Image 1 (cartoon, rainbow, N blue to C red):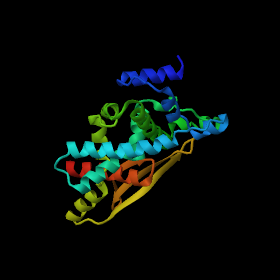
Image 2: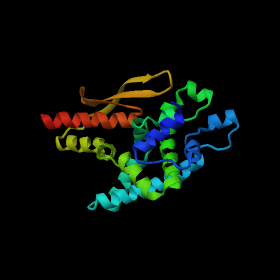
Image 3: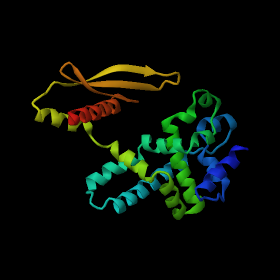
Image 4: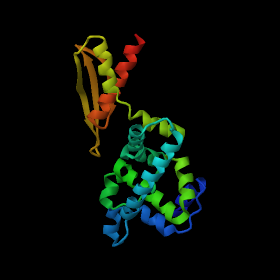
Length: 232
């Protein structure tokens, strides 16, 4: 089964019957492929349009579904939902990486697994759907992908500032020896690094967390520490 037929099947499973296949082909063409084949079109222009569409549709979604939230909270949650980590998470769940046309170098470095590229492709495909099908199908596309309840809960959870919450708990308990330490750092063959961080109170480890950067690992370590402190 060729990749075009497979993409058509994926879209059909989401209620999208492709009309202009060229749009989707462009939406999945990385510049490394274009450079090697002499193709003048890549997903970058569609990515630009898709980013604007997502900003609008996510704003509309949050405004309609979180009616008690003020402007600051809505802005924070929108940022959480359209950031690279969130869009690449959704793209990975759809297995969009296997449809991207890549040059040899990107294939060898597993470019289809890179969060930045998966994010870009989700944006470009959103634009392709808009141009091919209109806003009604974009709404359906997002409802089945980005706006799924579990996804929204996960993305909003990522905005919680566990480090500040932990600091407040410690201050209430008159303890101020809070410290975050990187206890492990692993870089795989594709130059992707994972940090493991421990949050220390005095000489005792209260929680650990792992993430693709120190900031994310520290938040997860703080969350682990809060959970332990509240239990006992």
